[in-house]
Image (cartoon, rainbow, N blue to C red; front, top):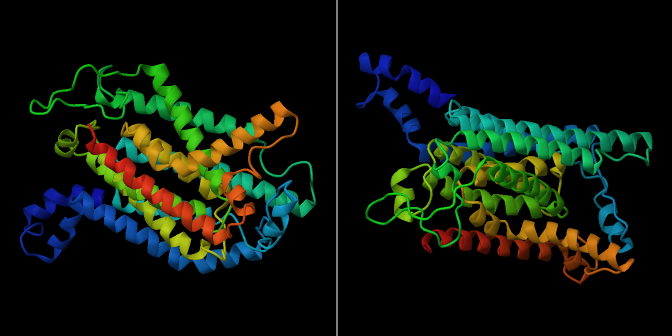
Length: 394
């Protein structure tokens, strides 16, 4: 809103000498700089969550919005029982701060930005509804329904992903637009020197593009949700990925940088750096209260929207492979659940892991919760560095 307001008043203020030069109003011209607005969104989201955190936590606690967790692993029941009084649904802080900061500092006239806000609102609402059903079910003492059924959430996520994929595909100009390119590792998008599109490149048609969108957005949304099982684990990992996304979106949205690094240039995608910055700031602010011992959990309200946004941004900037490398811990977590379920059913009750997701396997193997979280953070940060390093290997 601030940038849009500045842009709309630019001609008028310049005409009367209040824009540019050394006037007081010239201080606001920093809003023209995308990098400044990214920094401002990051800082504002962090402060907003930090300031509103205690009041929000107290309100959630007064509503008794808590969840001790549900597991069939006897060894983990004591672990979950120790967190029974910690309120969940704290994702409202993350989603709310992100929405407000993107609205303030991004150019929301850009289609990629307002579609990102739609993804944020829809998935946060889905997660909030799921958290609320779990709460009301626990209040009624219901054992039949604890939140939305998995198939209900999956249907919503797939439907939303199809719409997002269709939108993003239609933003491209023609079938050979770089917005449709299949960006593979070690592949040069441009020929050095000529700065023309390199040949041969693989361009996705509408159906394959939408399939990629569904797998990426739905998969990442559920991967972050599954990882959110220990104090600060998912929050810290998302913050690491968001920091990487700031770099990727700035590069993708600036033609000169994209051409120099031989990666796809996607028109108007640079504004997604503001969304990535807001994600980073909100997660760091939330981590202040979510680190061990946690005072609040994000619940599905936060995890579903954070994962979906990671997938959405990766899709738009055509950096699916790099982002998947950065999200390696999330992929390992959701992969451990899939492998455990398939193997359990195929062998009539045998298990690969002591307990899935993988962070519980490590915990039951003798690692303290804080060790699991800190070490997976380290792995996540290293994977983020590796992902960004792949940009130079062309």
